[in-house]
Length: 90
Image (cartoon, rainbow, N blue to C red; front, side):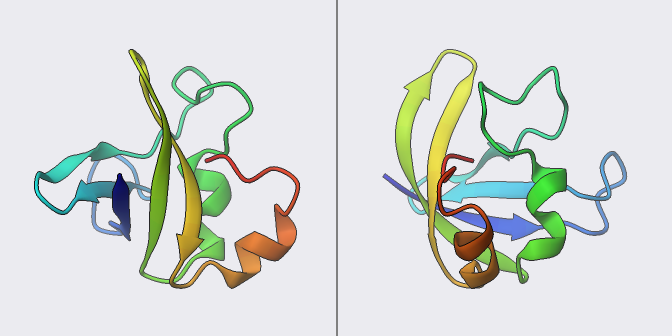
């Protein structure tokens, strides 16, 4: 499944919020941004926020009870792809 990621700089709860949407479903949640919610060695929203443009796309790799693990694919993530070449799960 493909997902789209959007920055939400006006989010009143998290200034580094990244919203996750699926085409047929709309908003499905937010990218984890706390050491208590990030799955395994995935990257948090805060670690990616300044590296991306306004949005990007990703591909769902795993669906777990705690959330989704996605791989970034395109749209504004060229810097991220270079920096995290070896660690691509977010």
